[in-house]
Each structure stands twice: as C-alpha cells, then as structure tokens.
Length: 413
Image (tube, rainbow, N blue to C red; front, side, top):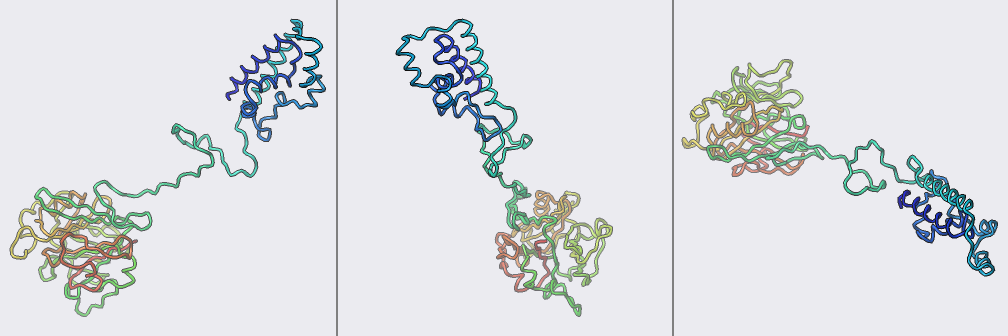
C-alpha cells in the first residue's frame, strides 16, 4: 500500500478514537483498529522489514504485556463495558491530545515506510539492485533484479541482399549474392571479407609452366592437407600463359614476366589480396608482394565498367565463337573485400555490371569457357566444399585432388 494511503487510514482511525472515548486510546489500540481496517497482511506489507534499512515500527505491534501495563487488553475492555455501560466521551482537551498523538504516530509510520535511499539487500543475497545509470529503458513492467543480463550482442557484418556462407565462430568470412544484370545474365557473386580471409595462389600442373622452378607446398596444383584445414573457398585463375594476357608470380617465383598496365590480382606476404592496375595502383608503397596473377586490361576501374566491354573479342576467344559464354572475374570493393563473379552464360558487359552491383571499384576478368570457370566454398573453415557457380562443370573437390590450371585458395586468417 502507498504510504500516503496508509497515512489517511491512520488519521481517520485516530479521529474516530477522539470521538468515541478513552477506552481505545494509545498507539497499541490505534494499531488494533488499523489492523481491523486494513488486515494484518496488508499492514505488514506496508511496514518495512526491520532487517532492512528502515527501523522497526512498534506502534502497530503492541504485545499483550504492553497492553496490560496500559490497563488495556480484550478482558479489560469487557470489564469496563459491564460496569460502566457506554463509555463516556473524554473531555475536549483530552481528545485534542489523542488526535495529536495519533497524528504523530501516523507521521512516524509514514517516515518508517518511506525512508529515503534504497533498502540494502540482506547479506549474502544473489540479487543485485539495478544501477541508476544502467540506461535500461522501461518496457511496461519492471524486470526482476535476479534476471541475468542479456548476453552481449555479437556484431556481424551481414548485409541485406547478401547471404552468409561461411562463419568462424560468430565471425562472417564469406557471403554470396545472386544478381541479374541489365542484359539478363545470372551471375553469382562470392565475397571474401577483408581482414578475416587470406589468399594463396597455386600453379596448375600444366599452366602456367614452371619448368625447373621448385614450388612450395602452398603453391602446388593440389591443396595440401595443412591448407585444407582452414580453407573456406577457392576460385579459378586466368588465361593460358601462351595468350600473352599478362604475367604470373607465385611465392616470389616469377614464371611469366609481369606487365605494366595489366589488371592484377596481388597477394601480399600476410595473405591480403588487392585488385588493381600493375604499375599504377599496384604495388602500393611499402607493399610486400609475393604473388601476382595478371589478365588483360581492367574490366572495372573506379567503379565503372571498361568502355571496351562491348568489344567481345577483346575479352578472349570463346568456345564456338559465342558471345554469352561461361565467364569469371574478380574485384575489390572500397572496404578491401575480394569479390569473385562467375556465370555459365554472360557477356563481358554482364560481368562488369555484376561486379559494379556488388560494389567493386577495381575488377578484372579471369578465365572463360565452361571447362575452366569454377569456384567452391565451405560453411566453416576446413568444412566440406560445395560448388558455388550454378551449373559449373567441375566438381567441388577438383582443387583438392589437383588441377591443370592456376587457382586461388581462400583460408580463414
């Protein structure tokens, strides 16, 4: 019960005392009448626990011995009634004193029930009061102090329009997006997140030819078991070395001379990858480059498709001379993410448009034609690989058993 309501009840009972005589005066009698009006449970609920910070209130809890000392108690009242009949009203001055005493008792009761400050919890309690500065907003009901705090929300980088593919714990490593270009082509985008994925370039068993150059284990035509343990995906490389489309360097070993002005996929010593024009945007000042895959001129530069995307012949010879064939590309967005694009039927303009839709600012075409376009992803690092380009010819384990052409492996950083 609110203290103000309890105060009004006490005062009303006190005034009743003043009108009806002295047989029921004193704080103990006052307490009896208050209990009669409110009930024991409600009065007890209105008076703080003496073990807390509020002092005990004795005005409503007089004992039988206290009542006898004051000449009261149930038996004393009965005797008075038998001998005196109706109890005469006390003098006006006595009634004034009774009202004053009752009001003082009420004030003391209200003060005890409304002591300032927060009542301390009993020692050893597992409940903790909510700090005033917690910033918790009201929700229509007060939460119990015993309710455990909600776990910290894990911040992911999920983005509308992109579907998560690979997680490491609560960290998103790879996501994908299917886009339809203005030309009607369906292109699959696979985004490898910057800072949580690193890359390694592998040579093929046939191309580029490495002659007498000895390649390290992480650059061989098949992905070794140590690399498979953290592998989250892989995708195809570029054109045959014999086409003159650009240079090739793997783990510091140059197999084909690098060419200025060529679009380049560059991998640093720490596994970070970038896409840009060799000799212009790349290498960056101080960059420790270990691997480079070049292929033709840029397909996307400054977030805009190349002005030559309409010249199909400039973007490689197609199987049977077709225009819309299997194609692949790779680019980098403003956040440093690497985005692979693959389609089993697209034009150069479609691939450029798809990269731009994905946010790519620098992009390059990779291999084309059905036999060579392939990508795989895993749900967790080291998990079972799945094909990523709808309709691709090559199986999901192709890079594990070995491949004839170069490719890129993405692993959890």
